[in-house]
Amino acid sequence: MLDIELKKDGGSDNELNKNQGRLINNVTFFGDSAIPEGDPIYENVKATAKLLATNGFTIVDGGGPGIMQAATSGAQEADGRTIAIYWEPKLASHFEGKNTANLTDEAETYSNYVMRTLGLIEKGDVFVVCKGGTGTVSEFGMVWCLAKLYYGSHKPVILYGDFWDDLILSFQKAMYIDEVEMAVLKRATTPEQVLALVQSFEEMYQKLDLKPRVGDESGFVINPKVKVTLETYKKVAAEYHSANVGKNVAQDQLDEFISLVNPPAQVLDLGCGPGSDTKVLSEKYSVTGLEIVKKFADMASFENPNAEIINADIISYDLPKNKYKGIWSRDMLHHIPEEHLPDVFKKISDSLVENGVLYVIVREGQGEIYEKEKKKYSEMERFYHLFSVEELEARAKAAGLSVVKIDHEQRSHKWLVGVFKKQSLNFSLDKK
Image 1 (cartoon, rainbow, N blue to C red):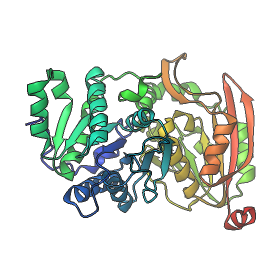
Image 2 (cartoon, one colour):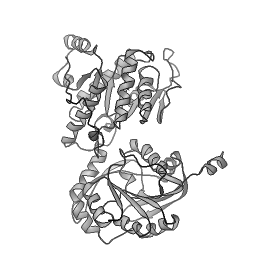
Image 3 (cartoon, rainbow, N blue to C red):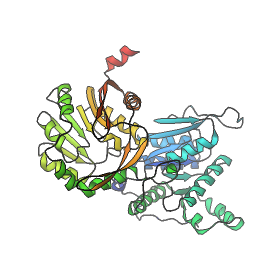
Image 4 (cartoon, helix red, strand yellow):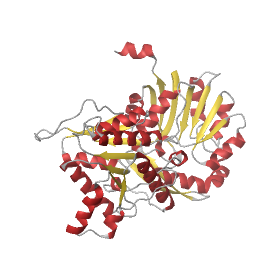
């Protein structure tokens, strides 16, 4: 029997899935394309994806029929986020083809089978391998091998179904399978067991001192992109606040934001930190501040008694829809990893009222980096997703925002100052 560790409650603890700086966010499903709707395996996978999506996980699959369609459908029944990595070969005559019914929130398409498999691996933080044919065998072999090679920061593998015991036993008898290769495999036979395992992986990795990774191998390991910045701010929150109190390097931009968003209005300070910008905005508006670091959120609450301060992570927190006339986001969106940016921009857009204004200030550049910066009060290590003008504009437009302007600014680094407006229905119709 493969090793399996479950919570007694079967994984009903929703709070774990809302942890700030969560390391496991995406679950990739592998399985057969020929299993029809109504088959017990299909329905089990669908129920599993639905349960995971209900608990805030994004579902990733190959965009085909069968198990892949079951995973997408289950997530969509829970209004969860879905990603498809399609394969559209030109020469493979025995491939079932892209399933046009499997439509997801985000999709990528490859003609190269190996690159498509790598895409499925890179998008996932944990893998659920279901019954399948040779395609599933190849995917299973790759994720199993990678888990062994990167053991300790590996992406876990869950074998779903009661047939796996005999199969793995056969591998042990006929092949050279060591203890580490067995340790990376877990088995589940119910949706609740899958959720409990995913939650147990999260608990385990949160306790480890994982290092942030960049480069070609970064997609093969659990990568604490958000956590490294979160932990840095936790450590230096008080000193950071003391060093920056009374300073506001963005006063000119705040004045511009105020000129664009006529009071009275409800506005959101996204990534409000200790609340210095919130204080300025509160003089004109009814302000809500969202802040991932609890110490900063506590400071912002103390400094701004008339503002509502929410201690939450924008990646997992659901913003209210059609509420804010303006959203101010200074030095925050560049701390969001690339895989979460489409969802975050969509949340922001949905949260704005018609013709509402989004004002962002982000680091300019290319790629994702980890940067150590020595301050008077501490050495800070932070993750950055650097934005080009083209990327910032494209992400805003994809979320339904029109570009008012994007300016360049030079301070200690190069910055982009972007102003966007939520498109009205009339605007959308006029453009057609």
